[in-house]
Image 1 (cartoon, rainbow, N blue to C red):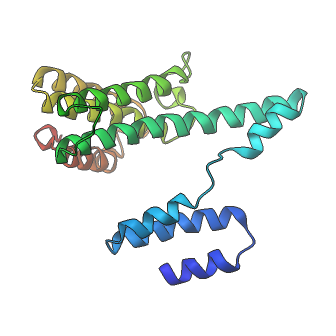
Image 2: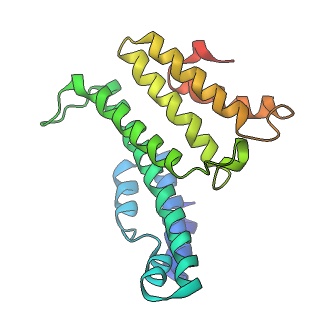
Length: 210
């Protein structure tokens, strides 16, 4: 995979394809345990995002400006709550491994994690469609997964801090979300719950598997 991806990177004139392949190449390096090589590949990716929609929304007018703005908003929204999610995951990992930081004490790691998760959750829910319910309340399929996962992660923070009541409350809310956010949940419950429960196990919340 590393050799094939490198050939594509070297020979392809498709900018988007090259960026995508670099992500795949970094994943392959990580599978081999070569962390620094993966890091170097990822650091070679451009920092700019949504360049087309951002530029069009700024430069164009009328319907073209509106359509580009809506597309840019959706992209930025998704990137923002995903970034908050990964920030929370990073703090959880730092807490678990007790990785020292010069400006933050170990006691604050869980607070930082939960704060990141709650910010991401607020971003996601702010842009849901208020007049709709269930699956129709989400801008796109996939938001539901992050919606319930934020609550699972906050539950993990609550458990680690010793607040078992708060942990249970977040688990209950996560289950409420997954059970009401897809129109076919009842008929496909086993499939949806497979991923729900797998993430609980990964978060050391196996006792809440349903």
